Length: 150
Figure 1 (cartoon, rainbow, N blue to C red):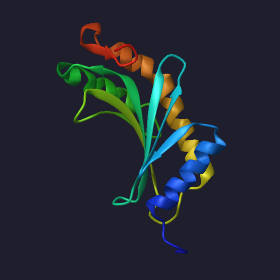
Figure 2 (figure 1 turned 135 degrees about the vertical axis):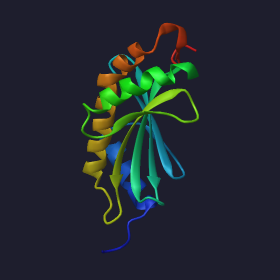
Figure 3 (figure 1 turned 90 degrees about the vertical axis):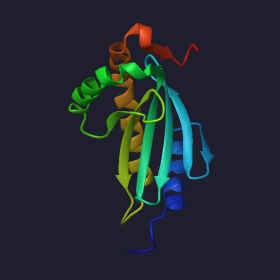
Figure 4 (figure 1 turned 30 degrees about the vertical axis):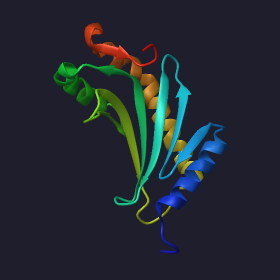
């Protein structure tokens, strides 16, 4: 292996990818934060270089919350949706009543290229944009909290 992949090098390429995509972002230590407007809802994104697992993790947070008692009903719906997605998946946060999308790229043996990172960011944004309305509609109105308007 030429050189050794590390989180700083990965984030440098992620910053270059954000520039190439003309996305505004903020670098905050070991991660990058940005947002974009989807067709119907804004999408928040966090890009994190996980040095322990040697992975580039891209998280997209959906801009609504649900009450804790809605978790059980959402599990099977998320599972069904995830079975239709080839790259990444939707998950419920353990510590907040939010749904997020996560896509991962290893950098164990090589640093993901600027083009690869740009592709993954595009896949993440598009996957969330296509599915966020479906997910929001699954949550009953009386247990949903729209972060855009609260």
